[in-house]
Length: 90
Image (cartoon, rainbow, N blue to C red):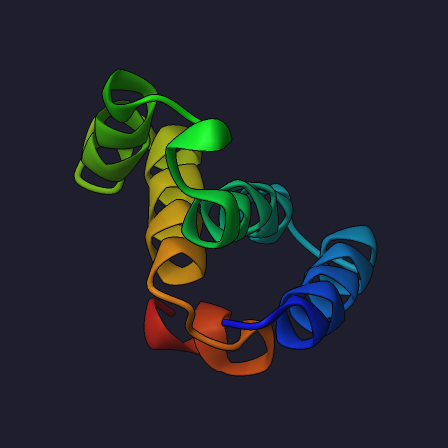
């Protein structure tokens, strides 16, 4: 992902987080932004332990907030565009 795409997707995700109609949607985009940063900046942004913890959160069945955060993180890290990312899990 080049800098221009990264900046555009960051703006889109920030806008969607701000317009979220549910707490889950806001958590998803919060995680998405973190994952996008990790994808773009690599280990300079998050170390491997933090990265693995965010990925593991996507599987947390006991805590829906953590799960939405983790699923957002995974979508951002895998460079799924922010417009369709949330629709992949709902």
